[in-house]
Image 1 (tube, helix red, strand yellow):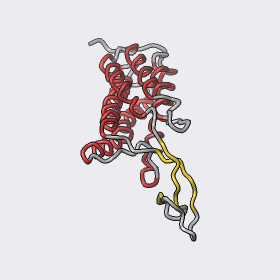
Image 2 (image 1 turned 120 degrees about the horizontal axis):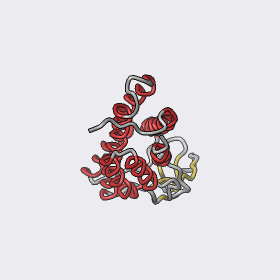
Image 3 (image 1 turned 180 degrees about the vertical axis):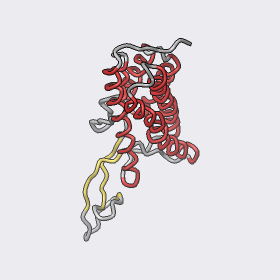
Image 4 (image 1 turned 60 degrees about the horizontal axis):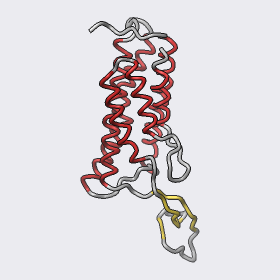
Length: 210
C-alpha cells in the first residue's frame, strides 16, 4: 500500500529535529503535507484535513533564534562574566518562544496528533483482514495510544503552561525533559517503521463499505 509511504516519510520529517543552528532542515510543515497527501489517498479525509491544519501552525517552530551564552561548566548556569576560580564554556542556547508561537505549536500538536492517531486507527480496524497480522495490529493499537500520550501530551502541557503564565516556551528540551524528548522521538520512529511494514503487507487499501 504505497499510499502509506508519504505518511511514513512525513512522520520521519516531523519526528526528527535536524537543525543547522536556527532553521530546522527537515521542516515540519513539509512532513504534515506528506501526511495529508497519504491520508487523502487512504480516503481518511478528516485526518488529512487535520494534518493540513497542523502544517502551517507547525511553522512556528521551523526557525528558532539563538544566542551564544557563557555558562559555568559546574553549575550549568548562564553567567555574564566568569569568576576567577570557575571554568566557563560557550554554549549555543535557543531563545524561548512567545505566547503566540507557543499557541501555534499547541494547535499543531493537537491537530497533528489527532490526525496520526486517526490514521493508525483506520489501518488497524479497516484495512485488510483484521483477523490477520495480529502482531502488526497489536503494535498499531499501542501506537494509537502512544502518539497522543507520549508525542502530543508533553507539548500540550508545556505550551499551555507557557501561554497561561505568559512565560516563554522552551522549544528545545534538555536536562530533566531530555528523556521525554527521546521518548517522543522513539514513538515517531516506531510509527514510521510500522507504517512501512504495513505498506509492505497490504499492497492496496481494502476499506470496509460504509
